Length: 68
Image 1 (spheres, rainbow, N blue to C red):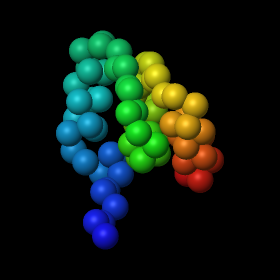
Image 2 (image 1 turned 90 degrees about the horizontal axis):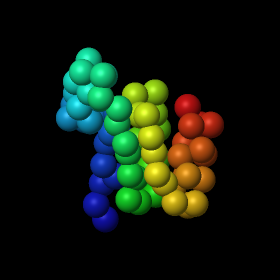
Image 3 (image 1 turned 135 degrees about the horizontal axis):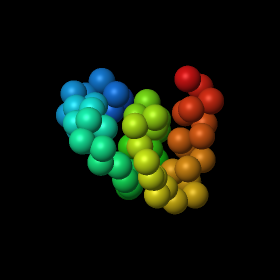
């Protein structure tokens, strides 16, 4: 069994990308592509201008946001 990856919020690349985009006034569009990625991206929601999850990804994001 593989270990569960760390949340996106703990990876420096997504945080840095969000920081640089905000500094440049560039909106960020996030496409989760999977339920696990959508759950891990909840910490980045304040930096995202647009998200395009499917129904399952949206439900997972909402549940993860409620747990925060």
